[in-house]
Each structure stands twice: as C-alpha cells, then as structure tokens.
Image (tube, rainbow, N blue to C red; front, side):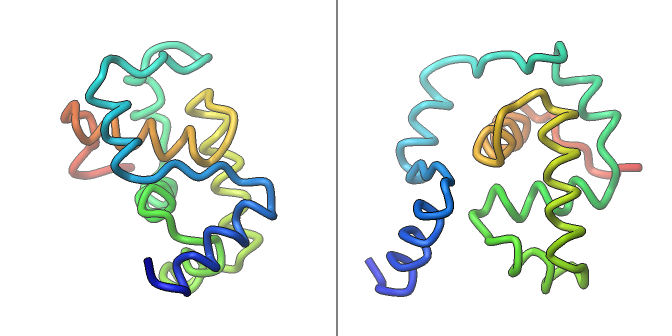
Length: 117
C-alpha cells in the first residue's frame, strides 16, 4: 500500500470516520440486500437528491476527502460538509460511509439516475 494512502486512512480514522476497504464493501453488498434507509425506500431519496448532491455523493463514494471534493467541484469545504449533511438526512443513513454504501448499492441495482435535477 502506498504511504500517502495509508496516511490518508489514518487521518480519516483520527477524525472519527469509519473506513471499509473496497473488497470488503463489495463483498458485503453482494452478500445480500442493504438495510433500507430510515426514511423508507430508496426511490424517494433518488428523486429528492439534487444534481450537486449526486456529484458530491459520487466523489465521497470514491473515498475522496472533503477538501478534494471541494477542489474538484469548485466549492468551499464548508459547502461540501453541508451537502454531506443533507445527503445523510435525505438518505436516512448515519454517516458518510453509509451514504457511500447506499450510492454503491444504487449503482449496482441500476438505481443511479443518468440525469438528475
């Protein structure tokens, strides 16, 4: 493993984030259905997400840090944090890892929209 990746993982852990290695995440997703969000089925959440929220969600599902997401989308870090907060509430998950898992599950189920609002 590259040292910069290892250091990024340690930083995330120190900030209280939960890390799930991609092979384990994929195995969990293929093992069975992901628990339904607190707010009901995924379809309403898909309709409620804005285009920008989808962009942020896609980047955090790739494991990108807030500052990297902000730089790639031309936003402030604070704005990215707000988007993530809204995503967590809309998806009914408890953290960004839950949002990433939800996103990956939608993609595998064919639920990720091609054009969002």
